[in-house]
Image (cartoon, rainbow, N blue to C red; front, side, top):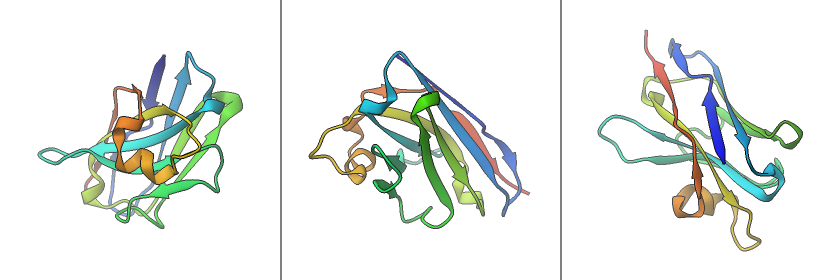
Length: 129
């Protein structure tokens, strides 16, 4: 199983980026997907997670209203649209996948990363003027 994250880069405050995570080796339909980030000297944070559809999503308070997660199961790809970026969004962003379980809300996958069993290598997002 391979998760390939891309789309990171350098952007000015207030700018936008779209991250993509292409998943291969499993059928995405059966997996919840999450985006996590880790800034230097800080713990990893669950940014946004999605179960099967857009009506089952979770966002950390720090990104609510600015980031949007979506998935295209036909392309085995998950996206994270990031708008109104702030310097504090600077981090390495990772995508991860975990088996979909009826008892797990999307928030569970972000708040308890042990629900994720596959991890990508990360893409660096730098927000700076």
